[in-house]
Image 1 (tube, rainbow over the protein chains, first blue to last red):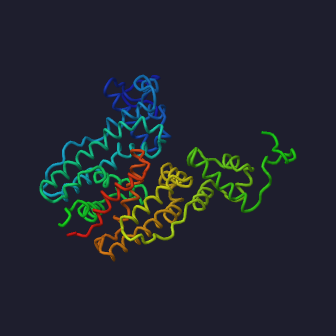
Image 2: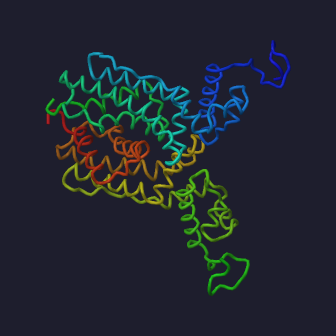
Image 3: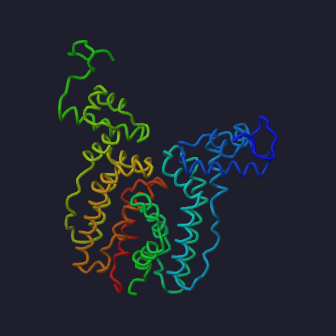
Length: 207
Length: 207
């Protein structure tokens, strides 16, 4: 309300003037915040500017459209998935990947991404396919491939299991149950999925 | 435009006057049509009335809100899934279920349902949970349970496979790949899912 302490009363926004990377970060954060609260369709450049305590012009100067802004915000906000560490068994490694995916899903960028996936129609969604593919799908497939390939070498996993359908099972189940039954993927849900689904699916024939 | 042949020029809508079940059916059809074209958020009672060539009052007289109308339209439009016929092998029966699910997914009520699932936030979606659960989830679980139980009796399927996680795999994969990669589940996609995912998942340990 009014002017914050230490700032002279002018026409400028209440927060101290920020430039370059700091202001950019504040705008991207505000965009994720908006996606999480009002969703893709409710997000406006005005709302993002207000959330970042800046003017609309500062937003438009950097991002000519809502699509550009949201693509950058998702890109910057998504967690990095680097390596799937060797934990000695495929079961432990799958549990670790699921926990990581669950944490990402319920992070602010995760909520934002789901809002984009669910609300965009196919045409709009194309703008984000690159972000979603490069930021989520491709890294998760890469980690699952690492874990499954290591399991094959250990003899825990059947040799023909390193394929795209197998890699998609956990992401598909996590999306489906979150959407359909509001599943929040607590520790027990994760263990059941790995033990009742993934371990039997990966087991070598004859094992 | 204007009056259709055989109808006197009055203030009434252009189409001949319909009553009761016929008009109701036309309104429900128009609601599904609207969901498929403009989606849940774009659907209006006015638009539905126009689509059914009737007045807004005729719609409101039967359904006090958009939620009530859409719930009834989905309920009336969804295909009935009765029995999973015995085709002699779990593979053939799963293929048949997938084809049926794919056809339902790409029917008009299927598009309408997906629009509701994807666009509604959790609060709105609660209104439709009953319809979705009773009209889609429950029947598909029931059919999958039949097929898997029959497979267990035949010795084709491991005895502990008749569980909720296994029942969810095919619906989850169908939703995920349709949404993420625009997969249309043609015959080859369906066969690959059954052969690379379901058959290994259901195979008895040691087989």
